[in-house]
Image 1 (tube, rainbow, N blue to C red):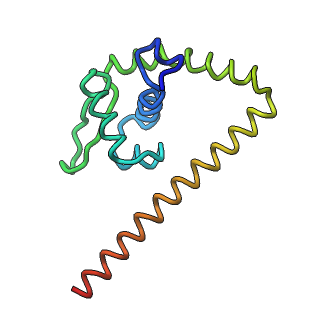
Image 2: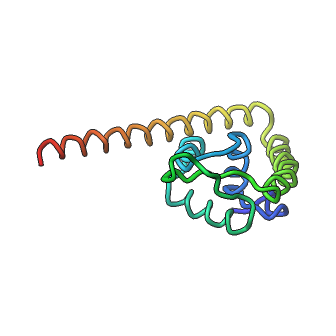
Length: 138
C-alpha cells in the first residue's frame, strides 16, 4: 500500500523500515524483525529493494554472518521528505477519527504489536526447545 509516503517514493512498509534503521543507527535483520514484528521473508525482500534503490547499504559487522543495514545519504533524504507527508496523513486520520478514537486505535495497535512480538519470541523458543529435544533423541 502506498499512501502519502508514495510522493516520497516509499511504500508504508519501506518508510517503517527506514525509520527503524534511522532510530537504531544501524540494524541487523533480527533487530528489525523484532522492532517491526515482520517476518524474515518480507523483511529480506524489502531490504533488498531498498538496498537496490540506494537508500540502505550493508554495514560491516564483526560477525560476518550478520546482515546489518544503515541509511545512505539518499535514504536520509527520502526519510526527510517522507516524514512530513506521514505526519500529514496521520493528522488527516486524527481529524477524521477524533482524538479519543485515535488514542484508542493507537493503544489497540500497540497491544497487537506487543502480542505479535511475544508470539514470535515464543515461536522461536518453542522451535529451539523442539530442536534440542530432537537432537537428544537422535
